Length: 186
Image (tube, rainbow, N blue to C red; front, side):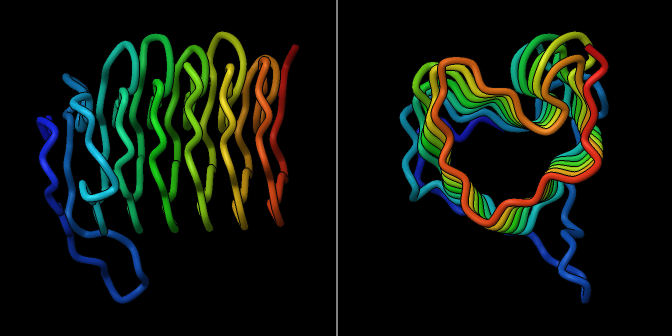
């Protein structure tokens, strides 16, 4: 799905436990979402499960020059050949609230990849069981970026270096975040 720069809201349904039941599935053949036309915070994704996406950069979602809003979305089992299994942000400033990144993988940045001065804001997000299969950043990889994270948890992520998070020329701002059971093999 390419939003083509439009201010749209794509809202799914949550079950009684607060988990998304509306599924966008890439079937392992293509990326699920892309925002690359200057989308603003008026482009909203809410209560969705983005799964089984595949792409070289951003298996589940790729944001390029965009600042979309995501709430209560789950990114699961997405794969990227290079960067950002769950999500890749390039020169982007998305806002994510209560989102989950689970079992996504990429060579670099299994859960999320932030580059080119990206500054995503994450509130109450969880990164669990993501992996960087070749290099760094199982949960999150930041290069020349300044993400802001509040009340986020990184659990059971793995990479060669930086199982939970890896920062290269980056200055993340973390507040009340939990890192538990992440591993690096290098």
